[in-house]
Length: 288
Image (cartoon, rainbow, N blue to C red; front, side, top):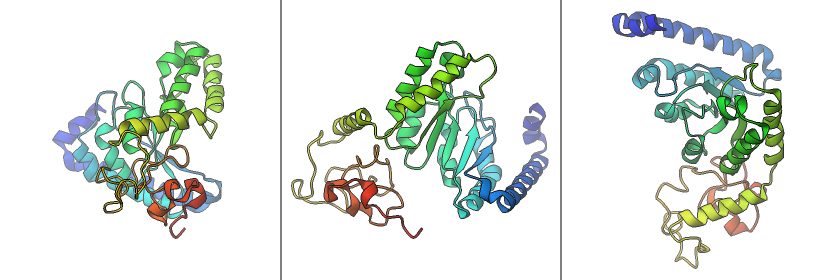
């Protein structure tokens, strides 16, 4: 690793050639995998540690010039075959999460608890990116009790499950020194608290929306509030309802101006506030 970092300064052309060759090998391996084993695949995971717990290992500009184009090519091949793509990297990735989304990744794993705040990532990027992992390996998994693990799982599901896009798991590979009872507690708590529909989470999500919106929870209809402006409710932020952010809370709790899904063909017309039914019952995929 040290020689690689020195090479970035002393022999940048050589390092770039190495990255190019690695990208070609990975792309070729993926094409062969998709060709010969497509029927066995449910998703593709791209594993490439880019960071440590405080920062990226290399400058983001280098990644954008030489690495991310290969990621984009890998995601394109997978999406062409309707396969989701998961990106696996330890460390603090906040600086390049928008780039990873632009590459086409559908999920990010494992979101180390001591490096990234999964709740912030979910709040900002939950419409474009699923979040996986995050239960801290040190505590509660290795040094805690089954009750500690259970509480950590419950809190994670409570905060990040509304709207979907959460996969509970360890924030690092699980070594042999993790007590078996703790690992079992993680699995069982996930199955217990992670069942949809989540009535308590629905109530919590509605209260969160009511507290955050400028009209403070008043029922919003186009007639009562003076009609919509450019497809948005009066007072709604300008980018809401256009970017697909944030996704609905557990089914159909999105605001009345918000498309129920980024790919929904009906757009805002399928809002529960207008149809009186859940988004899942009214939205229609666009040309799939």
